Length: 75
Image 1 (cartoon, helix red, strand yellow):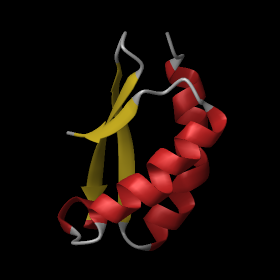
Image 2: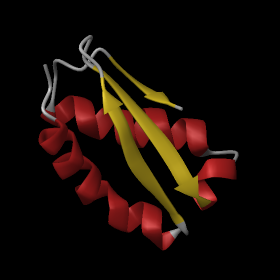
Image 3: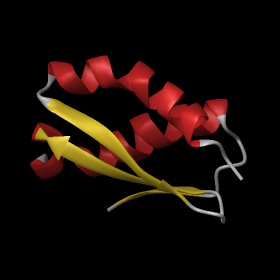
């Protein structure tokens, strides 16, 4: 199973860019199936580009550091 601390470490590297636009990301859960559940908050929560931010930014960065991730989902 993927360690939450490892995921948080990657997310903390992404936070400055998200914070600059008034948003943030929260880790909700790491499932036993290696799925990462996150919550976009602040400006990111209602942004029309949030799906792109999730897939092209957050998911890509997480997969580079933690290749065993099955998928990243926003909840």
